[in-house]
Length: 533
Image (cartoon, rainbow, N blue to C red; front, side, top):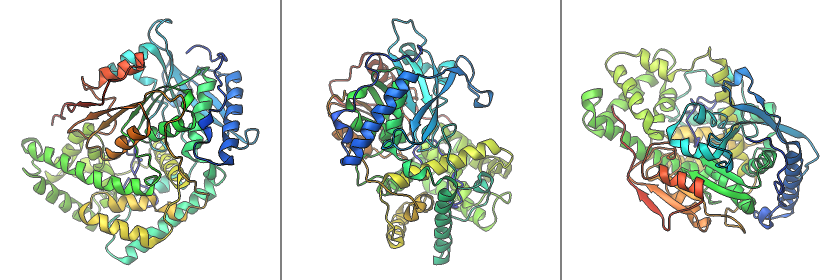
């Protein structure tokens, strides 16, 4: 399951579910830190040296900032450019790829400027290029940080405008209806296994040359090269969801290069969790947050008329699911498409009301609202290409980062067991990840995330009932990064906390970014406002 905004996860898998001129500032390129080979091995040493070479090159070249291409939909004064990085850091003079970056200058005075703040929204597979639009859209939560920092976004390797990868024709990818992710028979499982194997083969066929290099450590190295290209001596970083794992790996490989780091909604960085177990943990957390949403719908029965108890709302959901299985709604919305649409409610509180409204209309007899919300739009070729690319990167990174079980018996046992009490997401998530069982490229050992020399205090922000990145992940990273501080949003579960309005959290994030100061102890905050029906 993706850790960032759910794109329509309509894979071939039938599963649910989507500044100042950068001249070389003295010291913009630090030597590889002693910890650069924290994950061990000579290969790591070579990659650390390769990163230093690439960073020195990028610092010298800078970034040729221009107005953004019209089809990027990024209005002036946002500027766009490219940074060149090695495909393989062990071969810094070998094949190079281009990464798209964008920026908007700080809104305060020259004296107030503290450098660039680089953002990653998650995924893997999410684009960060919308980040500077928080300034042009006058996003109040980020106004203070924008005074001090240039906001810099980028598309990670393989994503969007950064040498994009693909695994299947995008129009095929979005076609609906897909098979119900919940199998009724061994034949259903066999069919899904075949789709997953074909998807992995499609990735190899269309993007095989990139697959071995689509790892989180390589994206962390890319981040260090971008830092150097910006003329920044140290990195200021904001990572959400999968972006927290990118930050954790960067902080481990380049502890001395970090200035400020905020990680929000944290992927559990334990080697035992990346990535097979992390996905199983998600299934449990999604079930919990799905129930939270149903409780809210029941409380607002006067608006939605879906039942006055969680059990009543669940019964309506099961009825909808059964109807769509028997006869896809509008010919295109089956159970897979339903899960893809409804999963946004456990992800984000902002989706609670819109999701409930569509459900309510359907029950009242308006099926079109549900078709409009949950069916693919075959005319949106750009959107479909972006969804397919996002899924390809998600799969490529998770499959390459770690060894996955290759035995179907393991997958079948674990998901059958979990599905009994956590039926909302379990099988859909399993099929989405199953290509990793037959992945055609080398699978790495995850970096051992830990504190290295020079790592400053990191700010960790997490809601207690997050579905996509369960709370334990924040606790684990907090343990591993000495001197970090954890802000817990209690009795809340929206994914991506730092962009919500919460008077206990927003000033603390601002204070850390502006002064580097952390609270003397961890902080527990009351939840942000509950959505209104």
